[in-house]
Amino acid sequence: MYAETDFLLALVKDEDWLGDAAESVYRDHRDELWTSQFTLIELLLVAYREDRDAERVVTNAAELVEVRGDVDTVVAAATYVEDHDFTPFDALHLVESDGDTVVSSDGAYEGFAPRLDLTDGVED
Image (cartoon, rainbow, N blue to C red; front, side, top):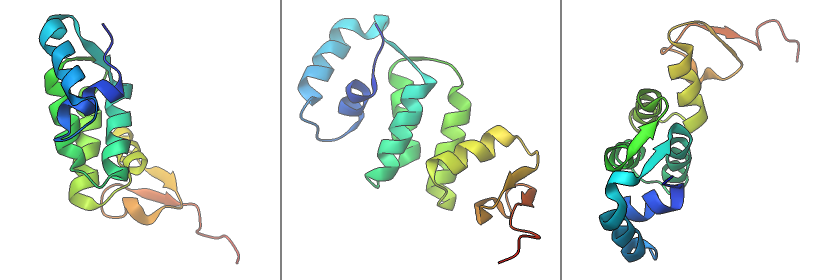
């Protein structure tokens, strides 16, 4: 059974209107549940938007069910969101760049990855 974002969010949040139902489903189907890295990315976005601990939300969800896909990238991105105030997608781009030069006008990468600044040489 594929676990979608609202199900996992109901499990990891302290208070959620779907919490009781999600816990019941989890108890009855724990061994059948799985999700994808895309659910973790959506959880990262929700945690960021709701000013929750993104790293905790993503890590807790990944511990609840099998995740098919690249969990480590999403967890690493969540760490950049929490520890260095990255936006979720900037953090994902940084982790995916794997130390390669990032071509971007975004200064968020300074000090974290080499960057080819698109604004260099652009006339105002």
